[in-house]
Image (cartoon, rainbow, N blue to C red; front, side, top):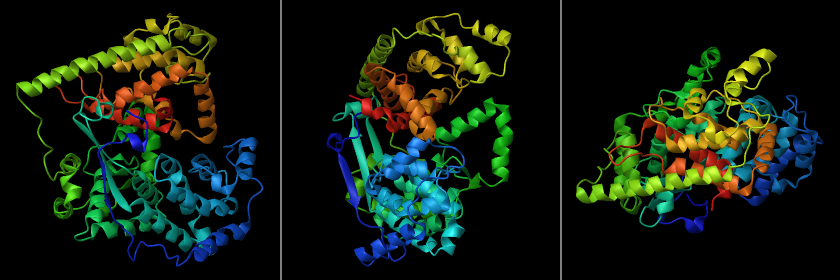
Amino acid sequence: MTKLNESKITNAESCRGSLVDNQTQLSFSSLEEALQMNSHFKKRYGKPKTLTDRYDECSAEAITRLLRKPEAELGWNDFNMLFLVGVAPASYEEGVYFLPEAFAFLRRNPSADGINCVADVIWFISEYAERLRQDGLLEECREEVRALLAEQTREFVILHWDRATSPEMCGKRDHRDHVGNDLPWHTLEALLRFRTLGAWAEEFLDTLLTARGEPLKSAWFLELVGHASSWLFFKGTAGPPSAERVFVEQQIQAMPGLVGVWEELQRRGTVQEYPAQLTPEPALLEHHASVIRSSGELFTKHPTYWAGLFGKLGLEEPPGSAQGPAAGTAVAKDEIALNARRDQLIRDIEEAFRSVERGAGLTLHEAAEFEGNDYCTAEERVRVRALDPETRWQDIPDSALEECVDRWAFDEEGLRYHLPAYMRWHVRHPEGLLPHWGGMLFWQLRLMDHKEKERARWERCWGKYTLEQKRVIARFLEFMALEARQHGPDASATEQDTQIAELAERAWRSYWFKFSQ
């Protein structure tokens, strides 16, 4: 995996066009009108001098830094801090002032930065929709959302890498395809999940669903239908569940105390059915597929992407694999190369973390048994700690790692000691694991899922690691995301491989990509 540097991306093509029509275009007729809209938000209550922060999410220093920062320099972490889903430090009166800057930021950043805060912005609007309506600002928010979706879907870019020209991106696979902009998925998911604004999302989806003879709209419609299975709090799609959904369900099964919580979420309607637009009839899917097949270069230049998506939607079978002695020889060579990379990565892990000691950190069984709390007697803790006599992480048996997988809650010292053991364990890929086991490690490494205080704490924690240790973690995530999907010349990726690969890539994108070489 290379860094997300456009100059390193090969064979990238795009279908350029616009989804801006009478239903989705921004109603601004001039820059002056846009500035006037911003003033409606900013003048209503003025710039806050502090944030209420009724859930104690932020430090006083962090709030002061945010409010002193020039508004044009606010980043995703600032908007995440202001509008954090469910526990926003900003009250309605304090947050309204920053909404125009938030929308401007999202339009400028159709990438991971925008993804990190778009749900927070949408939640804030949904939570205070009635207040915004009373202040005459809700319709202006709706126009901003329309403009945002129009900008996010202005073009359909397919990134394609093949093994001949980009072996570092493909690993063992012949090719890799990816849609260049993830933000529309996240924007629509947030609009639908928070319900109050669901009609805005359905209005936009209707413009795609009802399109006739417009390849750009058909491309986005099929992509959104195919991607919907990755949305955690929805049910009813015919597609396979995403790694995140499977991991959450597995955690609930492993911890019976959470079952009641999940049932309560469903009772309250938090877990909801997909909208009808994302569960269309096969005939409608086939109509949009036929538009793509007739689109010219959009289809002919990206056959592998469309074959994969059509197969996922049940429209076509994915292309068959090459057979015969030549293909078998190539696969055998690939297997040798994969094993060499695996062995080298294990050596890198062992060398980078060679001198890490356990110290006073939680042991493996302590972290699994007590989950980071102190609700136990001293005698119980001594008994459990004695289950882990090893003082070197290299000596922790795989059987113990497997026994406690996904059950631990380490402190910082305990995590640093056990992290290389679990990375090596994953690279070895022990046989016989149940599907979707092992996701806890990648969830822990995925920084964007933490609250502001927790994220800052973990960034300080990772700051204690050496540069080489952080580079090894990045290489480990790259390997798991791109190369560990297959484990033998005659075997396809298992369900566990695919799910872990998705989690690893998200963790890499959230923080560790900056240490890739």
